[in-house]
Amino acid sequence: MSTAIVQTLSEKTKGFSIEETLSFLANEYKGKVVFSTSFGQEDQVITVLIAKNDLPITIFTLDTGRLFQETYDVFHKTLKKYKKEIKVYFPEADAVEKLLNEKGPNSFYDSVENRKECCFIRKVAPLTKALKENAVWITGLRAEQSENRNDLALFEYDEKFGIIKFNPLLKWTLKEVEDYLEKNNVPQNALHKQGFVSIGCAPCTREITAGEDIRAGRWWWESSHKECGLHQK
Image 1 (cartoon, rainbow, N blue to C red):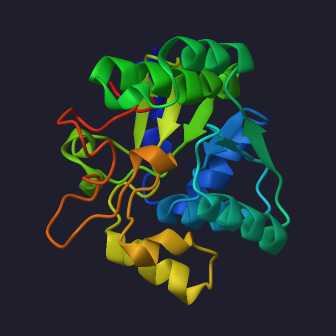
Image 2: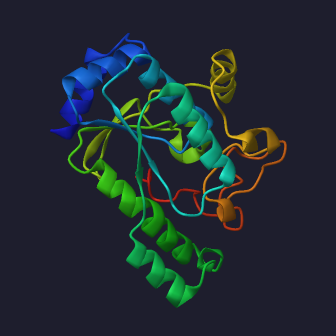
């Protein structure tokens, strides 16, 4: 059934622009279309497309409690410029307290298992709450961001969260994203100009150097697939 829905959506929106597809989804699944933003460059493009067309799509973000101040700055600027509500989801306080009391504030550096535990508490659990009872989840994923994302499709069914996933910028290059942001004077995270391409929690993100993979700065101390569990298949 889920495969059939994805195929139908792909066929119905064939030849549509991103804005036309977003409008179609908002109309087709009234009140059940959500967009998750972490205020990265891709997410800022999608936020603008939703806001300028006044689409009834809920924008939400996950505040892990460990974000950069620069991320909060672009959050604030985005709210002021586009006047579009952005709903915030936090991790459960009891779970964070238990983690820190048992393992300390930086347990994620000790092992992949510990890092994924922290990601689950601070990201996956709040995301599960945000996606509950919704039909479509819009993301800012791009194929060139990592090997894991090369085989993604515009429309997919996410078995883990039981939701249709739409990746509108899937085929965009980083240059196309940057050009759009510059042309439309969109607020951006100041860290992008300091070599930070993919920005997550402050203790888990560093700048990258020339020639490094786009996501090399995420969890740089480990050699896993560089995913936190939000978009893993």
